[in-house]
Length: 319
Image 1 (tube, rainbow, N blue to C red):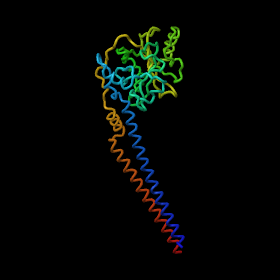
Image 2 (tube, rainbow, N blue to C red; image 1 turned 180 degrees about the vertical axis):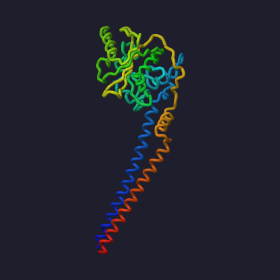
Image 3 (spheres, rainbow, N blue to C red; image 1 turned 60 degrees about the horizontal axis):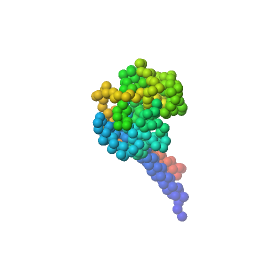
Image 4 (tube, one colour; image 1 turned 90 degrees about the vertical axis):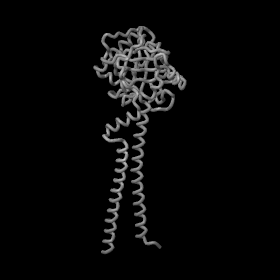
């Protein structure tokens, strides 16, 4: 029959090894999860970068590349550009509901950053009085993240135009106003207002809620306007709304030197490295070394506890 004291020590050693392994496994899981989170964020921002679809952007007298994108997904119906911002993306028109492209890119692939899309109730040729265009509010100037810029009055005053491409033609887009509204605002989010009196009331409603309204710019019931909508970080369940008026003629880009073709992954890594102060690989290596150091200190502490325990046991036996 085995010695009860020896058996007890074996149990203690087994439990000790089990705890050590559990701690090591936990630290490794933390490292893996942290690394995956970094990689996943990198992928999301890369997919949402303005450079991702630049190869498909329609050019003057050349829409072949754009037609290639439409061949991949017929729901693609246009392109929106706001000059001197990173808003420069293809637009899609859902066929089912407004959730269809919340997590799908213009190629209909699953993507957390989604697409820039028209309200499902709007006409894709912008023949409605008011057309609502949705886009995620993302940091790093992705998707509709640059709508924030228009909250600065100086930026709003100096940035008046953009471009809409649809039905095979370019149309100027004049930025009229920037508003903050509630997500459930049934008046603003009523696409395709029909009656003239309702159109006039719609215009007045936007004017009353505008943070800035461009001086000297009139919007009439005969115009066609677009509502660029994205989430607001300033108010709970709020939305930023950029109001634009579609022009019959194209407006040249007054900022011809703007650059929108940076590599998304390099851009994200550079920004992250600038924030951290070191290259990303060095931080991953540092995390790994830190975890190893923590584990070694833990094992050292356990060894010291074990020695103290054994010393006490010997002292008891000697008494």
